Length: 88
Image 1 (tube, one colour):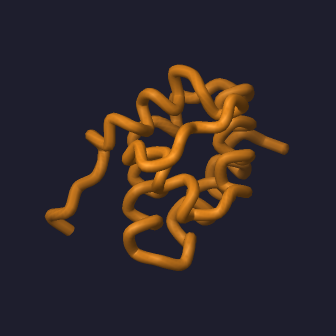
Image 2 (tube, rainbow, N blue to C red; image 1 turned 30 degrees about the vertical axis):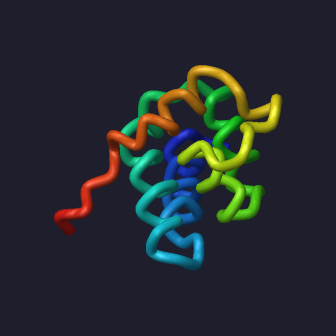
């Protein structure tokens, strides 16, 4: 799959989670970092998108431990939550 098409699909999935909170958190994360990710990092994000929003959000704010497969620099960036712009 061409990278451009993959990014468009991931963008859509990141911003259409079902709740505004999840959209802002997951979509905002993708907007800030997605264009710079390697194929392996995009794979990680795709796997993250398969998880339940309540779990992903809990990992981000630290109320649930992060599963081993999601630990690492990308999750560290996600947990900073410095990418959310609530001025919209």
